[in-house]
Length: 105
Image (cartoon, rainbow, N blue to C red; front, top):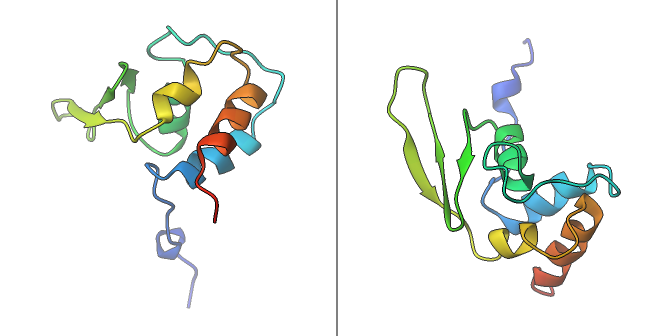
């Protein structure tokens, strides 16, 4: 039987653990612009998770689920905006904020 990548279980893009895993793969010294609604940290993250044409706002984001569809507005999970908007705007600093926001297990 041939392998089909759709069989792989996808991570929940709204889980803090998924954001942390993505941040761990970024260059920790790279800076990002928080106010660039299409290229900020969270826009890059949600685009990497498979969302199309992501446009960010403070508590939600717009995306187009299909090329011919109207946009959908999706609320942000708790802490995501706080992680992105910190004073130091590097991926490493955002990772530190995300780890700090992660509940102890």
